[in-house]
Image 1 (cartoon, rainbow, N blue to C red):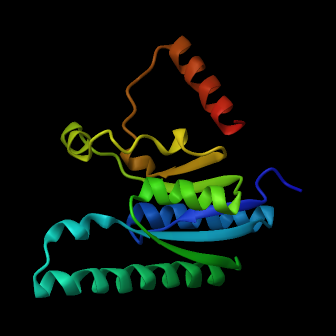
Image 2 (tube, one colour):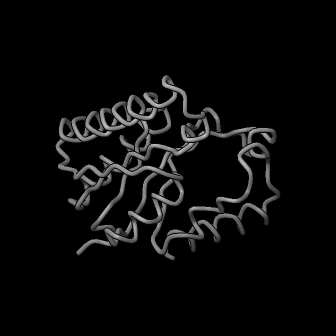
Image 3 (tube, rainbow, N blue to C red):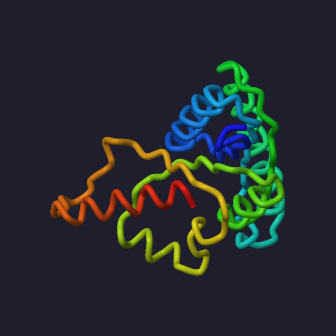
Length: 170
């Protein structure tokens, strides 16, 4: 049995989501891991109101999210990875954590896009970190072109590497 025998890939058809899907597919194939793909429809559409047009919007968004899930499963299949698709509605962080617990996964693969201070402020801090809600490892797929990490002093870089190593073996 490998360290990562059950993997949850989180996919939303964005560039970052496609990168996570690609990285996760390679890893799942190499490890011959049981693979699950999750698409989450955020619940922000409930805030729009209740007129006739707004009432139809959630149905269209749900259909679109389910198509994205189907597309992801097809992309994995084309890469030789058999995945079970899962669809959820709600806060992505809450749903990823819930599904990860239910499936007892060893690894979650997510994409990440850097955002500025204003975007972080707007998103708020009420959702907490995914890291704080799961008991498995997380692989974060980041575009190297967007990785503008400030230069660290030599001893800070060593400490950072140690922390990353510990997080992976959590």
